[in-house]
Image (cartoon, rainbow, N blue to C red):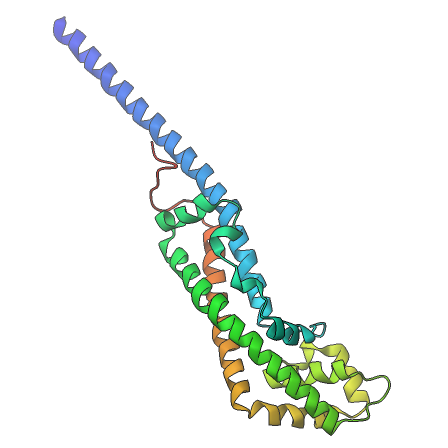
Length: 239
């Protein structure tokens, strides 16, 4: 009888312990899930937005305001001087917590901040200022009298687009106008001559390498955004 009692008692203790373990496991998993959602919303999503914004700095479109490069070069201002990923997210503590869960992403972001945003981008902006100045001078010399329907801005955009290797699908409206007035060959020649400049080669190299690195890290962040389970451990979600 005593043995039966002890067996029942032991069975109850074991059963209770197992139930407690299952409860704690579920509790921790739910806490980890909530924590991961907080990381995604407050860190990963803002990080992706900032990377996309930085990539746009290295691209040009038909609507690009090219005097921006001249203005920034003259006054030395620029958001990159004050930017940090830590302060750009919605929760700085969660950003630091990335080291516990996604160390490689954290290190990649440090690289972007230091080498691309703080170093490559200012140099790129400065070189773009030089490029815009030279292209404007070339346009004035080679195409002093443009048709009324064609602006200096149209020719500037086309020259930069061609020099950067954009296809005509990236500037369809300006391309169409310049083709109608038979100006494309002349502009292609200007762009070809400008590409030979050493500083333009440096500019294109900075742009190409920065976009490749930024796109790689953006994809990494997107992969994390689509994960279902949080990796690693941290004080915020452990029992």
